Image (cartoon, rainbow, N blue to C red):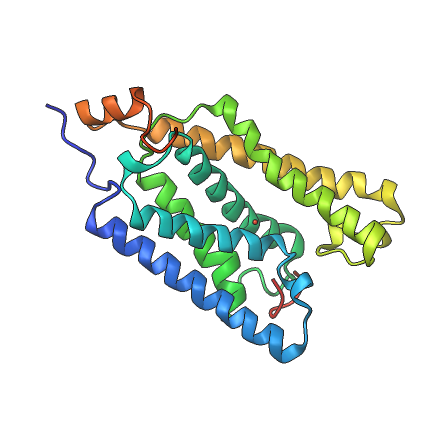
Length: 237
């Protein structure tokens, strides 16, 4: 009989790890909200950052996994977990490559909120995905749907900035930074391509790491689930 992989959903180290992720994410966002109120930043701007949205999604995901068992989750749950993992990991990578000032990338003098939301939480969630297998095997072809949220975010940001208040959350979305809308093809295309490649890599890792622990997992994978009837400075996201 094949021995079960020790880092499963209910293992004590995994539960503890996910609790730490939740606490770190909640503290970072609470700190952000305090700064938002103190500095007079409009909530409509603060919560429009992909970084903030991705970290909130992480909190929801981790609480969901902590409160429910694998067999009680819908069949599509592992794709939701994979998508949120991809969003937060790519948030950290895009920040390091495109948004951080050169002296911030490896600096430890940045604020906790910046370090947590762009460094600690992305890598902690990424390790959770790498070390704790999914309940069902991921279909990489279906992971293309994970791009729906980044694309929707992009369109919503352009509609808001172009038609409503002229505010864009990131420089690679701002036509004023690139000589007009045509100038956005390059920087925005690079970000979208990075997301597509990153999503496919995360999905592939999830598929390769999948290991059915035994007959119970096989039945879980084959039977329907009972529930089936997403900044420039240290202080900004």
